[in-house]
Length: 193
Image (cartoon, rainbow, N blue to C red; front, side):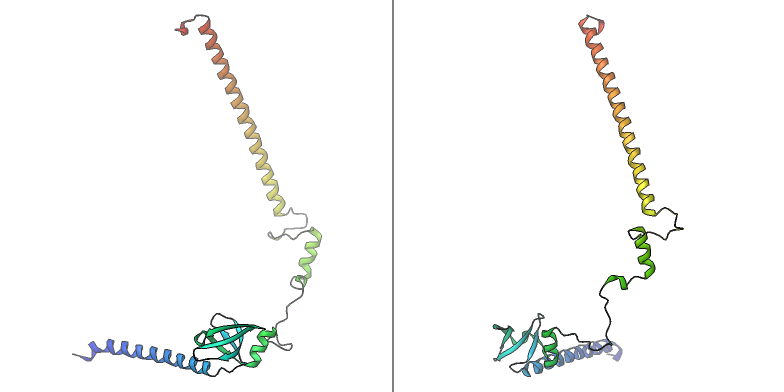
């Protein structure tokens, strides 16, 4: 056998070795992290719940999820042991960004829009989300659309009325023809037989 035929197998075995090695390292790090747990430390479970460790047993951990509320979890369910500062920050809801370096969030929307946009909105009584107007005397696009819809509705009403009139006329003609046929049969006409 030549080395070229064995090369794909060697590469495959090497890749499998590297993958299992990294997985074993992750497992060992997680095991070491779980062994470092002490009563009173803050933890995050794999489900995303934050709790305080109360007791540690061989395979289980007693966690206090809320004041006076205890739950028993498997050690494997502990996703991370948190530092005291981080755990307290999460529980207290303190902002991780301190000082004036953080982003500033405005209290109202007016600071997000320019003064020009507010002036246009005040003049019109509403904000026009259509294209920019050609001039102040130009008709807004929304008004044009409403006018077009109104014209379509009027045309539809007119066509419905004319259809009703046509149907009524046809019905009158049919009844008149039916009456003539009945009269002819009564009179003993040729159609009566």
